[in-house]
Image: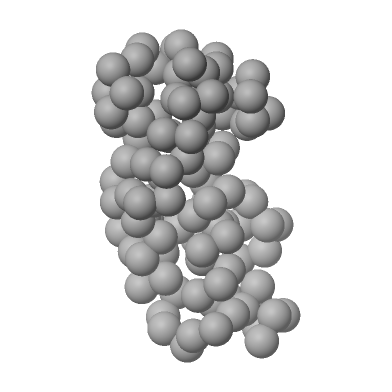
Length: 107
């Protein structure tokens, strides 16, 4: 049963990462408690649902930064961060450099 939950949440993240989804909305989607979802997801993937979502969003963001010239704020919005400052902070926390510097280094 846990395997089915993991697959379903992974699919949910892939389909909705660019929206304002939260761990709470993921749990609600499966009719699970947030705590139980965190527990089984971390057990089977090694990451919390939030970490998995952030990793997925950052993967999509780096692809857009590398392959397009759209503004950084728009990249953030396309991957689920409507606030450019929030996106830039999350990106820098994840990669250690700002999206602008990452783009310059990876063009």
